[in-house]
Amino acid sequence: MAYLHQIDSERCKGCGLCVAVCPKNVLELTKELNAKGYFPAYQARPEDCIYCAICCVMCPDVAISIVEIAEDKAAS
Image (cartoon, rainbow, N blue to C red; front, top):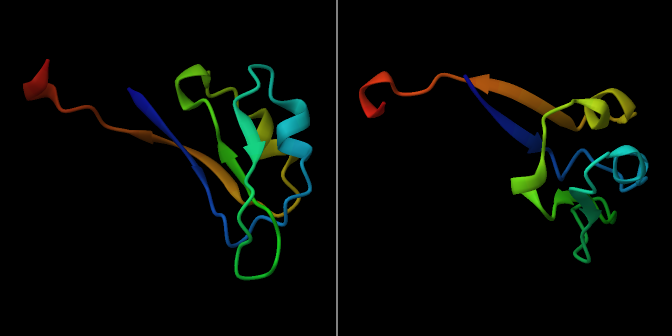
């Protein structure tokens, strides 16, 4: 199975908790404001993500999710 890491940039208030706890330093805060006036988190280095979900647990706004996606069996 493969995984997809998603951050809802409109829900994120840019508190930085996810950035602080990421063991692989994948996350950073963007320099662009969202609609609410916050600088949301984003995956600066998505290739380094190990999908540990620590960021999901730490996010007080439930703005981060990791979902399992089915791989195409025909492509294997």
